[in-house]
Image 1 (cartoon, rainbow, N blue to C red):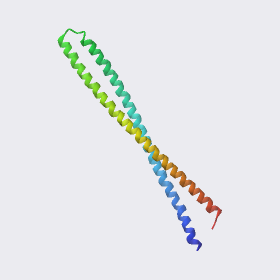
Image 2: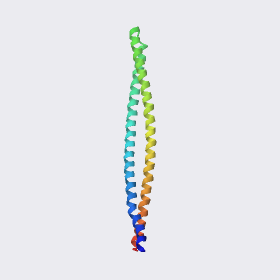
Image 3: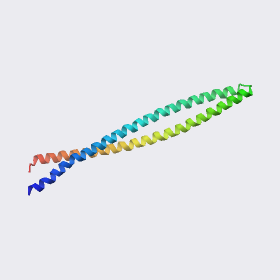
Image 4: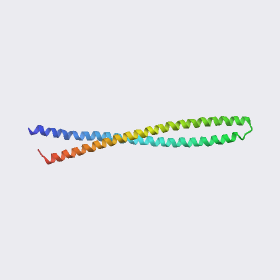
Length: 146
């Protein structure tokens, strides 16, 4: 009669490590995802810095050409400067669009990072609870050999 009763706690103890392994694997996977999201966020911040530098360069060049077009009397040179200014304005507009896209991706990445951090915290809390339950069960079974 004692054997069937001992079988139940034994099955519980055997299943505990399986839960722990699953939570550990999930935790490792989430850690890897967090690392990847952090790297993507860092890459996006670098890309944003490059975009801002290019915007600044284009703005300065555009200002210089605007100043030079007002000081020229040569119609051919004025036309050439006007064409260059049109290209600079188009490039500036492209960089502004790139900045908006990168900013949206950065925001999305930060949101994803928060979600993954919350999942990781939940898994770690669940793992802690399982470990405490397992320790209590182990202490109870050690104190009660039957």
